[in-house]
Amino acid sequence: MKIAFLSTIRQVHYTRMFKNMLKNVHNLSFSGVLSITLLTFFVAIMVLVPLDSIIAKETSIENPIKSDNLEEILQRVTRVLVGVSIPMFTLMVAIGSYYIITGANNPGNREKARKIFFYSTLGFFIIMLSAGIVALISSIIS
Image 1: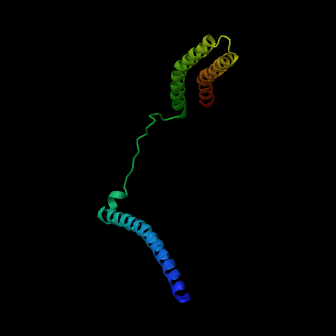
Image 2: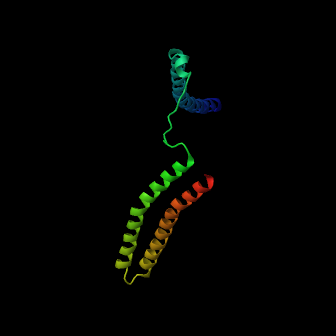
Image 3: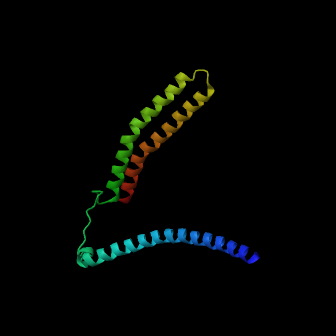
C-alpha cells in the first residue's frame, strides 16, 4: 500500500513536471521559430540582394542646412528664435495680465503673474541679446 501511494505521488509529480515542461517547450518553440524565421529572412536578403548595390562606390550627401559657415548658421538660428520669441512674449504677457485681473484678492495669482512677467521678460531679453552676441562673435572671428 505504501509503495502504491508513493508511486501515485510520483505520477502526480511527474505529470505536473511534464505539463510544466510542455509549457516551457511551447514558449521555447515560439521563440525558436521566431529566431529561425528572422535568420532565414536575413540570409535570404543577403543572398538575393547583390553586394554591389549595398556598398555604394561613390556617396554624396547634400547639405541640409544650406549654409557653409558658422556665422550664417547662427544668424539663421537667432532669426528663428527672435521670430518665435516675439509672439511667445506677447502671449505670456497676456497670460500674466489675465492672472492679475482675475486674481484681485488672491495673492497666489498675483505671485504667479509676477513670475510670468519676470521670466518671460528675462527670456525675451536674452533672446534679443543673442542677435547682438552673434554679431559680436562674427566680428571677432572675421
